[in-house]
Length: 102
Image (tube, rainbow, N blue to C red; front, side):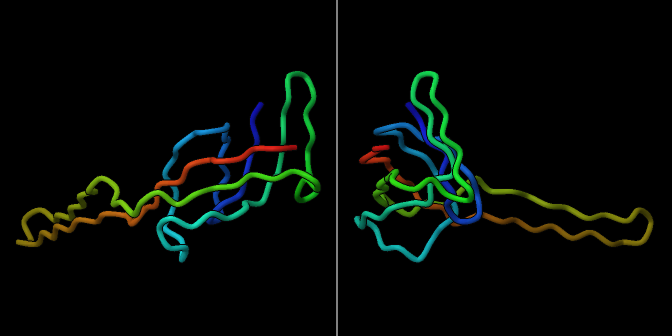
């Protein structure tokens, strides 16, 4: 039994009690909210929404705010004495699926 949800303009395949990372949203840590459900699946029965599935509910809980791995970038032009280096860490949130019902 799983569902495909839309969260922060990304799609995730989730199951009950699953923990996953997504882009940081404006929701504070500890809050629970319902996500948009695009698809539900139970055994051999698949229900596809247009655009969302009505009557289904997935409740998510925000566990913590984290940062992703550091991504390093580097530009270089030979014989021109030009080089530039930078780094970036994406802000993420950790979510847990607390309730999954269709």
